[in-house]
Length: 103
Image (tube, rainbow, N blue to C red; front, side, top):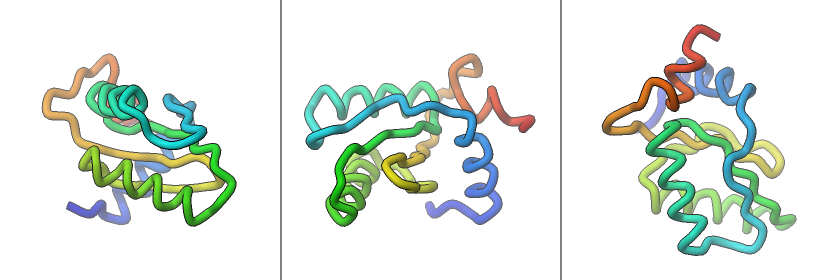
């Protein structure tokens, strides 16, 4: 389900306060995929840093991440992607949406 403009604006505001959880240098591996999956389950909204200089390769990699993890790309600026996926059982102490909802 695509995000509404209101949701995108809200998630971008929350994402401004976040630091990248995962840094990708040379592509996806099983360890990186499992860490992204864990982070999305725990936090719902995460930043991923993609250190690839080729713009098209970077966009393709971010798109691949979103497809593999059934997530939505909220924003891609420079080398940092903001990614969202709804958690089945959101943990209030870990979910960035719950922790920063009053921003």
